[in-house]
Length: 354
Image (cartoon, rainbow, N blue to C red; front, side):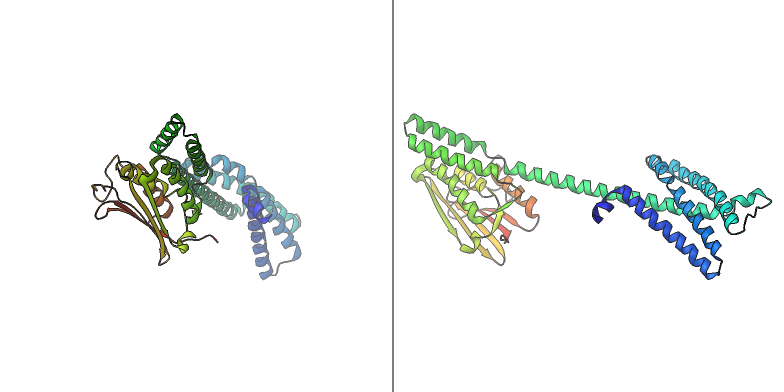
């Protein structure tokens, strides 16, 4: 309830205005106590304070309209408004004071009717500075929140774009393999491949790319993907997993390994008559998850430590995804291994589900 009250700018205005004027009235009464004034003096300054408080409500609609004025026009509006309102406050305030405290006294000169208007002008000027200061601060806060929200949405959109970029090459080859199996009347294998493809696509589309999954779940999904490729390559594709039990509990971005494995199949297994082996190792060391994915393909000539252009779009997407999620708290390196093959090494912070 309290948070809801202060969340509304209109409520904030009324609360702060009441608190400020209450402080002003109490301060004037403290001064009167110090000078040992009679009771009717207190009533006079109390009524005058309430009058000033009520007149201050006229400032808000004027300033709301002046908010979009130029700085010069805004300053002039504040000065003129405060001066006019101080005169409007001074005249009845003096009349009330004379009526209540001086029992009907009236001065001989008209100037006495606007006595105190200068001090009242400064009171309204301070009120105006506070109003614009608070409003400017609120505007800055809203702008900051909007910028943070925009950045968060852009970050989420970037991650989703990278996450959902399934390689068309994989889909084309899979569908082509299914078509071949159907033409060869291998309906059982074709049905198995369709089922695995359906499960894999369902998982990839249903899981939120902003959420992390356990490494054990990631391996299950990876095996689903490799099962599809196994139907295509049969004995030409050898798979070797070396996963520590502690690593299985680690949280990682969903489908972070699939593009890397796909890259190995495309450039190492598919291009070799005899196929090849893909090996995945995972372990935890010094509160970090260490991943190694390697194949025994021909390797590649690196360009400044990177894959050449046109090769490994999935690798690039994975690198960018990790960079978005972990900033500088991770490492991603690609290297050739002896006697042949390519290795991807990833280091991530070790996180587990609570």
